[in-house]
Length: 107
Ligand SMILES: [Zn+2]
Image (tube, rainbow, N blue to C red):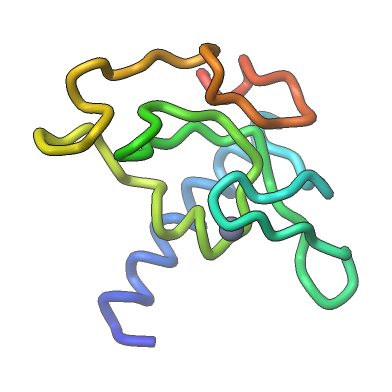
């Protein structure tokens, strides 16, 4: 991992940890909304959710994510040129996939 990659991972991890400590994020067997990983809880760590993130195609989403995908998306923001930029489709629309209370992702 490059130093830049490590710093990015660390920022994503600390943000997640803060949300865990507040009880806003929990471990889950729910599949990762980005890559589809269904953790077995043995060889793969559990996913975590609910997490809110920006998807260039789908807009704001709430879902369970694996750590790799969280590192990829944790700081994504709407950008001109994103398919979903014009609509900025709102949360709690049809972009929600979590087995926890999705409103936790909004705090
Ligand atoms: Zn994933």
